[in-house]
Image (tube, rainbow, N blue to C red):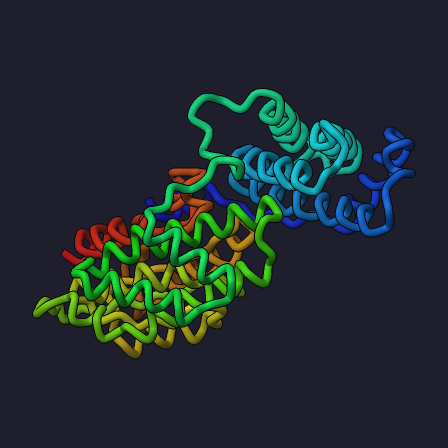
Length: 355
């Protein structure tokens, strides 16, 4: 059954540099006035946007679904608006994108690519009901979380840490600190960055500071688990060169609070090292995380490597991250045993698989 599911994901690699060049040429021909008014910096931004859209297209083709390209189109539209590009620039951008694909892609990709690009253009015109909140939708924050974020954006890590210590001293459970402060603050920071209301440096500082605060209070995390000890090991790792590890770290801490022995390797760990860790720790469960669709080939390779090792046949694999929210059955396509949407879901999945 797993082999049949795995066959549903076929990695795709396009000549992105060549295609992006053709798209720039086409855009300059089709919209000469707009193009001629662009500075060199803005032209470079457009090129980077075409490359990013092509990466999303690769994963849409790999999954035979337009979902990743549509999700990316909505994201890039908000970036164009924030960046003060001309009105309706996103529609022009994806019109050129679709036109070049219809002429330049190999025949076996052309039909799906054209259809997916068309759906992306349509999605920009009329987002369907139930569309997730966009960057203009502020993330709800409690007064404590708002104060915590304010200090972090100002670079005042010690004062932000004092907010957490005060909440803990008042009896706020560790899990609530994670779910009601850390997670919404991270989401709001990402939203602010997307709107150019926070810099990349601030976004990185917020993530780094939260990670450090979690490290410094790890004894509280262990204590929150009480006397629960499952005597079972989980290896938690990011796939490939994935650097965004804080979501996985939250999951790892929730698992530790649930009594698991968690071997956390974090970001950018080589495949062989992960396999060696699973064997050396005699782990029964592996949880793997990615944040972007472009990391899917790395995750799929890691899953296949785990499945191919005869010593690891009994090991169960849980996956998580934003791509699995965009395509709900994607976990089956990459050959995993379960998917977790959040830390509580990861705990529940681990309990179920290890039963």
